[in-house]
Image (cartoon, rainbow, N blue to C red; front, side, top):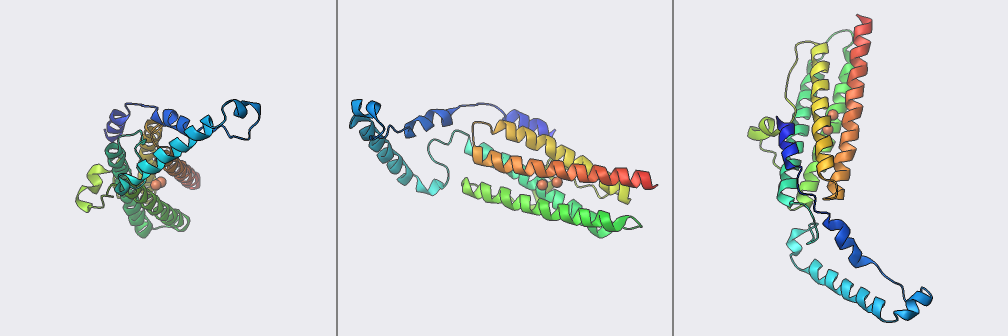
Length: 221
Ligand SMILES: [Fe+2]
Ligand SMILES: [Fe+2]
């Protein structure tokens, strides 16, 4: 359901980044015969472009990292990032619950894994919140809407194996929705895309860790 909402966001590839990058192409005045032909012209147009860039940078300074050529709908990106932030916070809470509640013979190594994942999800939440602020948005930490906005669920689980299963389900949901977000950001916002790609890679590692724990527990029983 929530993933479908992300898919609905995945519209409108403008490709304006490619168009704007042309403004920075420079024919260096000392670059040989080709430069002699256009003496003064290329250098002049380069200077004009720099002036334009500088002037634009001074306008709307309160927009921070969001320059006029930012090709995405920044409000939509912030909204999608707030969903990812809620997902990470719910994952922190679920892993913390599992860490403190894990009991039994096999619990020590599983507890260590739960704690490591909780800390890594917390770092993801910080990365996402920081990016939201860079984009001029506000990270939403309001607890009353976190579980509603989160892609994955908070499920406590009755046994150690239930907890691992629930964490694996949550990781698989995060992987699928983050993959959609990464695709949606293609050509729109390379920095946010890179952040989400790094987080996605870590969620894939988490899923693999949990899968190995499940296999180990099945073999031991
Ligand atoms: Fe995460
Ligand atoms: Fe994770």
